[in-house]
Length: 387
Image (cartoon, rainbow, N blue to C red):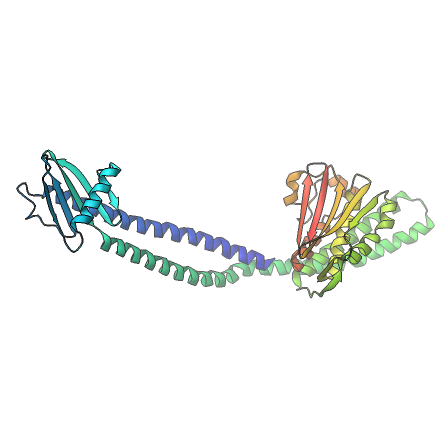
């Protein structure tokens, strides 16, 4: 539980940091890109203003090309031969004309085309150097960000131990209190129960004694469940994941509830695929199956309880289905919480503690199984365990 909380803390923190890095990186890149783009168009405007009227021979054209077509069809051309050729500029001019745009970008070249003195002036500026710098800067930015992010991960992971220390202490103290209180309560409850049993031998059909005995049994079950949860939280389970015949094991567990089902006028209907073999912890399987069957016997409103075991790839799926009109569909996210009760009066009638499904969830988590509840609103509920 604490490890899961620590992982969640680290994940949330790293997600926030990732968002901050993305925003910062995008802002820096955007400012650089806008500055370069604006500078390029300013260079084109400056070049346009400085074109001599009597010819282009004297025009300064660093990394630029100028093509002027007069109204009579005459052409004048000048360029930086390190960056452009006449054929390349003609191709750029044709592409710009076909696009219908007066300014824009073609590859690493920015262009502007204007009508001037009855003719057309086409200007092109090569920005391959700036583009190369942008790519290098972007690569450098990503690399630095990635290194910083990895280093921050280790910092946050170490810091999480400090942050979670008070929570861990409180959690340990809580479990110790539950264990100590449970042991302290067990003795007086045992005395009360024994005394009530003795009195029951002398006074038959005593309603008050029956109530005392029923409530002591309920309190004993509640304390036992609380101590089981506390023990599972405190200790690391030693699992024996040996090969098991789940069909036989689950069938044996269900069979043990036949007498109780008969007593409560219920029928357990089974559909088990034969010889489902799977490595799993036998004790954990027995506990989780027992909890789900016991839960169904307590809360099923119809007579039949359906249990099934099917092979699914390299997994096995055990399901328990019964009618239940008290559960709402939205309860499926809360049903495994400790002391969850949809209907308090119903829970008191059945003697449930509200901890059985929490224990089942804990067993599933320890074994890395998946347990879920599918609730058809106020009609039925199906519990599934994927082994």
